[in-house]
Length: 205
Image (cartoon, rainbow, N blue to C red):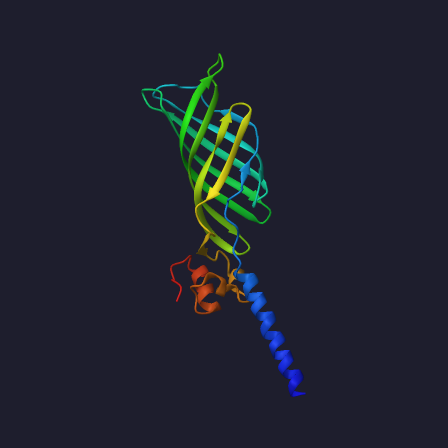
């Protein structure tokens, strides 16, 4: 009887350890994420010198976060015609949403008789927030690709992190069933719930 109880105890401990490990597993980085060709449009005529324009793109996203994306990209030209670009993007992947910003170095040109079409190759950096069942996380890295209007965009991501860093829970459900342990900063479930209830004002620990 004692032996059976010992076996059960070991089995229960192993099950709890595996469950904790599953809870602790965070989301992947954006390495391998790719934005495929999607429709693009510019909101103002192309301004080659001393002007700017905002372009919007949307389409399929593939990689660790498959789904769809939207991106709003602003092209700004200095008086000499040199372009810089900034962007904000969102990836919708099942129950996970990724939002981020980019700062890009670009070679952008105006095309078309009407001056409303653009083409560009770019490289730069991104900062992203990943929110899903395992909580909120930060990722960052490099990005590069090309776009043209009205044809679309292609872009690839490479993270500079080995794994995203936790930003803390976004709901009390993420604190339950040992979930508070996955964030590595809370003393217990109540500590985690208090953090969520106060929007982070009650610091962990």
